[in-house]
Image 1 (cartoon, rainbow, N blue to C red):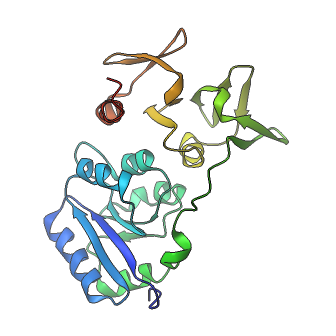
Image 2 (cartoon, rainbow, N blue to C red):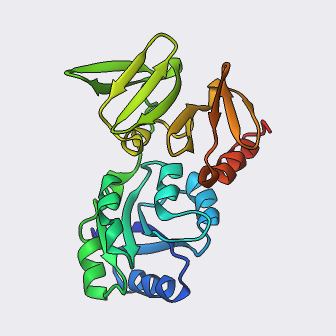
Image 3 (cartoon, one colour):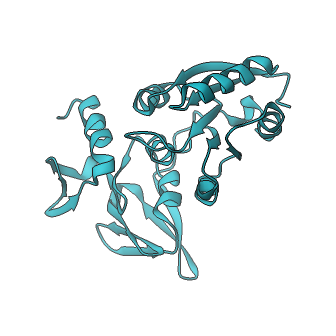
Length: 238
């Protein structure tokens, strides 16, 4: 059961109206849980979660325009997540995102209770107000290499590795781009392609299909384009 001494706020994102209502009913029946918002449109959920993250996100995987995993890529590790899906084959991917649990639809109330019983108390899950460090340690070979975030030009996926291109060197780390993205401050870095992450302050120019970092042209992936351009518009620089 959830921590009864603290209220855990929840956001539901699921494009199936029936399952959407079932989860909302489960939350309402469970002491210690409070439904903060519910969305059938993942893009509306993205706009909300960027400014009002909850303690727990109940998230579908297969949704039009924006999948659950793409949504997690865009918002970063800002809250605990329980995946709800009719597709068991996505479970391993889900756990790469450190989800609390992976629920297969249809979800019973007993299984729902077991999942929410795993969440951390709401008060221990809230982000620290301290400023994040301006660097990141990554494993490269047998060393931990300190990478200054201000010097990062872009990050590229290369099979099982991530290549962090800085102003002075290339750091190769045996880590997935998804894992590395979670460690980067979301207000400074943005995913533009399944193979590329770029720092916002290093972007020199943008068109429909490309981003320029210095003299280098990087592609914008079709699944990331709309959300990336929307973020640029929100910053008032388009």
